[in-house]
Image 1: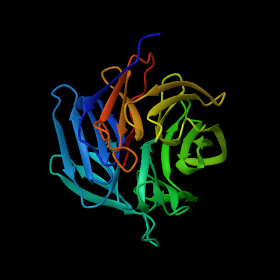
Image 2: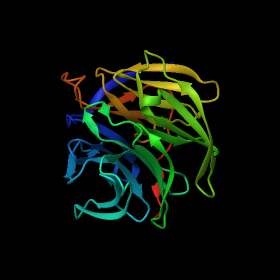
Image 3: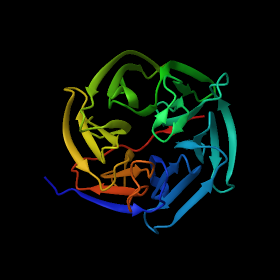
Length: 294
């Protein structure tokens, strides 16, 4: 077993860092600061950090097949042109509500963008419950609501055979699975595959590796855990020097590096809180992210 190493690679001091995303052609890591309303891009070769400020909380960034990026800001799906620093609204959700915002999301292997909402934060980590929903933005820009009554819509990914969709509603303290139809994007047959222990804390962002195991960032737990969705067992814990670990993605030249975002909210104001970390020596690799096809 190789020795695991954890190091800080970007120091943006995010209030609420989220949605790390590896962009291979730019050798870059993208991520957002939801509360700071910024999208960041860190070049792993030059170490340069660029950022674009937005006018609403921005909770995810995803690749787009036709170029540029997709983001969610407030309750909008939008396209981000990095060169022009411009944002174009694609569609909007929760039109009948004024108390929600988007949170985590990811593109499926067919090019659809899944993203969920959550209730407003009364204060950090205290939210209006059962206000969120999980949505799909299709390549034709239409939106479907998959279900509602969500507390904090969070980590999501797909199994290697694309037959299972994994999903986290953070305050359920569970990693759930659904049957997945890649042709239609429909999900069904929800069940829990892993219940968080007290030591795990709150499940947040999630990423799958090439062995089909899930890596889950544990908010307030200062760690990422590796779980086996088949057995429901926790296989590995990697500790980080911050409490509020928020999300993770694989990246680097061969996708063997795990990047972890963090926050610096009420629980954690230590010197490294809000930074982005790189974990190496895990002995596993991840997959390139999918691109939105619309």
